[in-house]
Image (tube, rainbow, N blue to C red; front, top):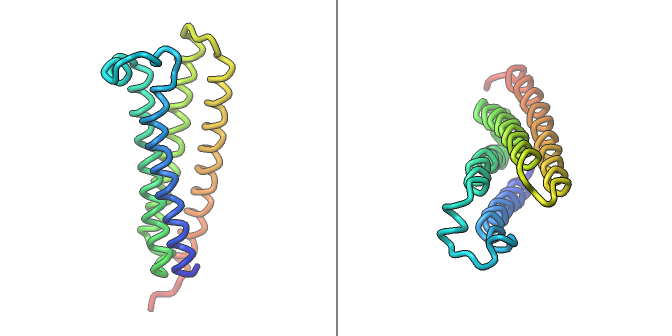
Length: 154
C-alpha cells in the first residue's frame, strides 16, 4: 500500500473517532427526557448513559489500534508482529463491543422503554457491524501472521 493511501485511511479513522466523540457528547441533549435538564442531570443521573460511555472505550481502543496498524502499513511494516498484535486487539475490542451491546439490549428489553423495537434494532446494527469488523480483523490477523512467519528475514 502506498504511504499516501495509508495516510488517507488514517485520516478517515481520525474523522470516525471525532464524529463518534461528538455524537456521544451531543446526543444526550436531544433525548426527550433530557430536553430541559441541566448538564449535571444529563451526565450524572443517567446510569444507561454512563454505561454507554464505558462501552465506548473498546470502540475508541479499536480505532487507535487501527490507526497504529495503518501507520505500520504506511511504513512498509505490514508483516510485523506489531501489526498482528494491533489486529488481534481490534478483534477483541469488536467482540467486547458486541458484549456491551448485548447487555445494553437487556437493559432496553427488561426496562420500561417506549420504543423497545427501535433500541433493539439499533443494537443489532451495532452488533452486526462489530461482528463484521471482528471477522475482518481475524482474517487479516491470520493472513498477516502466516505471511510474517513465512517471510524470509533479511
